[in-house]
Image (tube, rainbow, N blue to C red):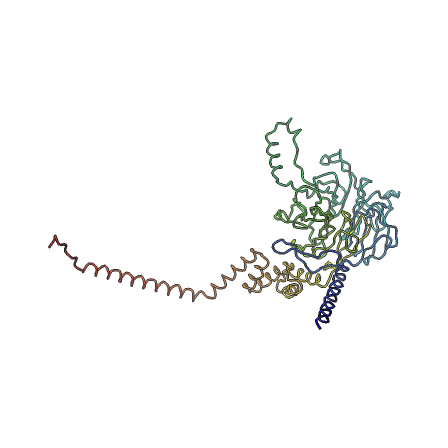
Length: 512
């Protein structure tokens, strides 16, 4: 009997292990990486997946030859995609479903009727206003502006302006255009910012230069340079900013977002720059983009290296980290939403240092696409049900519909109790509904002291307003009681003193 019972227990244990193994295998098949987020303490905690990698697409899958060192990925207003296939000196235009090549852009017609080709192109942008295509033609030292018929409308070459250092070659890396027709070009040999040209191709100056981090070394150099002689200054080190190397534009609001992958500091890793060139994220100097801390990874510590940035149609900020192969997705207020991707060979994993571009598609950012230059593939992540709920709640919240966002945020917490963003959204919803105690509770759970204090102030104000009469009555009553008690105590003290004075003092023997 005892042996039979032991066999049953053993069988049940084996069955449980097999079931758990099957579950892990299923999860791993969907998610070849750890899905995590950060709690209010800045600790990485398990989280629900907002996106799952659905498929990986190569040049052969698209019906053309293999991609060779591709460097950029772009989506136009019609949801057509463009891959800058640098090693093959061409650009591929791909359908929204990402299943076939619609057009190969490799030969263009100059204004004089002659033909021209690309040489190691690096970047592309298609204007939503005019449909013109802007190409950073790197090794031809130019930028091309072409129409839908691939006729060159403008060629931008090295400026002859004295503002531009004539000793520098003109090597366009990335390019974009704003709704006024101004063209911005990232160059790989200047730290002054993007070269800016007007709609006619005339050089205007530089835009959005990074700041120099105020480190102890920089401050010391500034001091010694200030007091050094002109001869000494020639031999002293100069503090220069790190150049940003990628950017994207929010076409609805006109802000340009830049990303910087190199440099020894965390200054200006991601910037939000207005038309005047001011960084609207400058107050976030201590904000950590990507992973919050250097982490033990593959035997070494690593540091996030943001190599590309994409602004989704919903305003989301998508940052691509080449070090870990991860995409960090934030809402427009820079609150972290989701993390996806890793280094590896499975779908949803990338080669080490191989990722070069990220792009999104959909009004609610339903798809995230990542270009891996080493593998020559584009991986497509699709939004999960959980991801859709988070994005719905975020869209309502950022639109100012805090109360309407309450139910979606509560649903998010049901599915993931670690999701800090939901606590913040719920706190805001209750605050706007006048339920300040509830707002304080959720703000406390999110460790959001600012929101907690704001809700507490309103709660205190409402409490005083509702109970002012009773508070005044209580204060008056306490004052009366205090006055009466004080008088009684005084009378009692005076009586004791009088009684003490009336008692005869006994005489000493000598006095008798």
